[in-house]
Length: 327
Image (cartoon, rainbow, N blue to C red):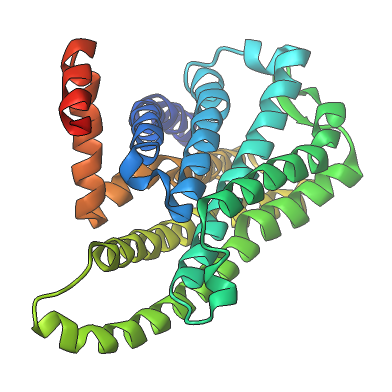
């Protein structure tokens, strides 16, 4: 086996084993996230509303996009790239849901900043009803903006008997690379999440100094503990978002710039391996949310365990508990 064949084989195995592991963990985490953030304890939080919408978008992204990568690049089943309707739906849903999920994460960072502000005009924006309206507007916005993907995405023959689902419009492909991949997947989320994360950290330090005398007397409200833990969830998610997006953005720009260059077979195999690593690493944005929340928040762990226990309880036990609570 030559070096090029070895690199292609490694790329295939990465998509099978690493991709399948991420697919299973992502489906479990996204569904568990949705159920947890829908729990009455967290439902009224605007921050959790953004994360609930992000979890739904992440679930769709994993089902349509990651599964297609496993089938096509892992098991080498070409029907996902030769079917015109599936090519358009998959390409459109991948772009639309990924943009929505990253937007909701950015809005969650802005929401945490509003929740720590002293001014009433900013704190009024920190409510679930505003968050729902923002999420619905964001979904409509990205859906309209990515409609050209449905028009230009088509199966393209890249080698003998081998097809790939790509943009057939040069102008739209350049927009997709330099606006969506570079700005919407990279610079904008990094900048806004880092900016509002830093501003939130400054506000939390100021609030922490105010709590010193209160904490010394043993009185710390539950809302204060929730705010601190939600901030921890946010900071860790910002770090993962930046770390997983850098290879994806750099690979897209490199592929676009060097598209017309003559490359050896070995270089093509090396670039293909890096492509698979960058694409799989980018899915950490959508897979890691539940596990980040679980590790960084004791309240989230408590609620998520309660949600899991409720799933295995029969309706009779749940109705009996509800009756006891009401009494």
